[in-house]
Amino acid sequence: MNHTLLNNLFKTCKESSLYGRYITLDNLTPLITKLPSRFKSEIIGQSVLGKDIYTITLGTGPKKVLLWSQMHGNESTTTKAAFDMLNSFIEDDLSSILETCTIKLIPMLNPDGSEVYTRLNANQVDLNRDAQELTQPESRVLLDCYNAFKPDFCFNLHGQRTLFSAGETNNVATLSFLSPSADSDRSLTVARKKAMSIINAINTTLQSDLPDQIGRYDDGFNINCVGDAFQFLETPTVLFEAGHYKDDYNREEVRRFIYKSLLVGLDCIANTVVSGDDYIDYFSIPENGKLFYDIIIKNAQFDDGIKDVGVNYQERLVDKELMFVPQIVFIGDLSDFYGHKVLNANNSRIFTASNQVVFEGYENDFVNIDNVKLSLNL
Image (tube, rainbow, N blue to C red):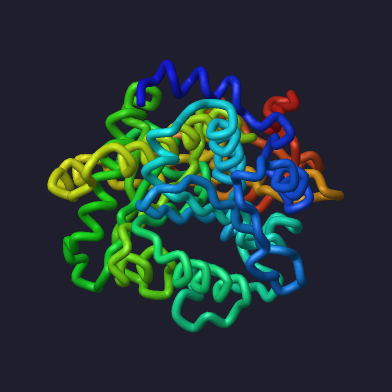
């Protein structure tokens, strides 16, 4: 699929009712209700607190692809992109995909966590560490869906923090991918190689949008993770991670890149033979580092010398509104790290609102340098 088609489709099909990072089941239910009849929507289970878990099924082809989003309730960018994708199948003749594939989407696996904007479910369990014990209803719903649908491919849709770099570089990892391991030896199974082929197709296409800003995750094996568990069951599984881009803390630009990645991945499955023979290029994608802070204030004076100050935004839900709260998380030498925003204290002291020298854990919208307020807000 070419960039012109994808960009034009996104402009036309972006779901305008979904915006920002706080996306709940209440946002999705009206969209699911108004889907055309050829899109089969059904409730396949309930969350801990009794919220409905939906699937949406479209296409008639023999290649079956299962996608799920918001397994972690605070990772919503892929959910937005998934509904942009659904709109594209409504508005455009993407028949080559829908005639070849049957797509089943779980748009929100963890509606309780999404409501309170947390990674965990209502029982404070990380569903992505529950693939074997299956202690949670949401985990059982996903596995039951997998077993009933018997997918040929899985797309596991997530979001990542702003700290990740594409390799040990000053390039933020705007998108990251992983072909999870199927065993502790990280064997290159057929399923893994096929997942790598799909990632290679996405990486090749998206590099023009994000040169050197696509990374891959470490492939250490954990059978309790859903992706690893499905790869172990020999279903090629691709982990998608929506990351940071410029000042896009609402992840509205990133949703476009995820949207394009989803359609490129589906097009690869629909219109090529995914054999895994070209897997080797996957290892040319740089492995993610953790080299970014949201803000770095360089050259601050402290009693024991000149140091740098690292600030990260803490995402907090306050009265149903997501707030980005600046917090000082590190004071020391950050010469080997990068900031999405870099400020310079020019060898001056940095003070809190109460005129104390700043300290790790301090939270406020500003600091004082030379009696001047320096905003830390977005």
